[in-house]
Image (cartoon, rainbow, N blue to C red; front, side):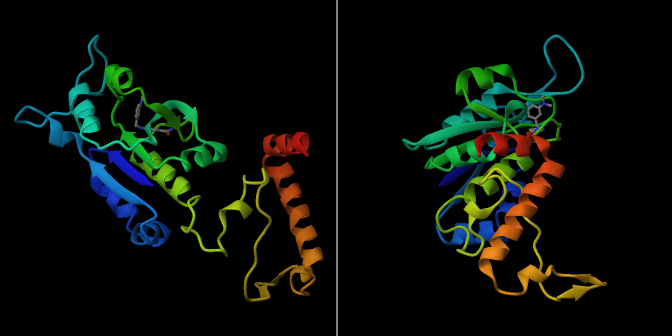
Length: 229
Ligand code: 4G0
């Protein structure tokens, strides 16, 4: 998977992708992360990427020309999707992440300030995706969340042990509680069933905890799971 990220702050992208599992995925050749800075496509001597809004009002708007030219400088493969990260986008879900993981290339548009000149949307026609109903100072964190979420679905990124299809949401339920050594910590013991090696009992215990926890914390997910099972 090739990720091409349009960002005014490309170091934010490079830095996050140089740690832990994403770093490993880059080194293994499973993902490639390129950045393109729209500032490098400005035509004036001040390298201006934003301007005040027509019609007045507070804040700055990202100019169309640097973004469109930066976008058009990217080599697009056959199986490519372009995504704009914005609070006005379609909410990201595990199911959408699985759909994105089927592409060979994702172009991600990160905005700032009050957002994009509308003609960027009209010309590029990106999918518009949101991480939730909140506003950030820039689209880099949502873009990195998307890169992270998609990368861990790709063959070889996670080890067998960390397998993505045993995680929350893949079965529609929240995860059961996890424990590791020691057996007792500050008077709190690990549930006995996890210690006795009976795998049928362990599976049942974990499933019941998953149900109980989902019902309590996410009644919306629980009801959906119940309807489907
Ligand atoms: C475009 C995404 C980009 C428009 C981006 C802001 C939150 C999210 C940005 C705006 C972002 C999210 C209209 C403020 C950059 N913040 N929820 N900030 N506006 O995924």
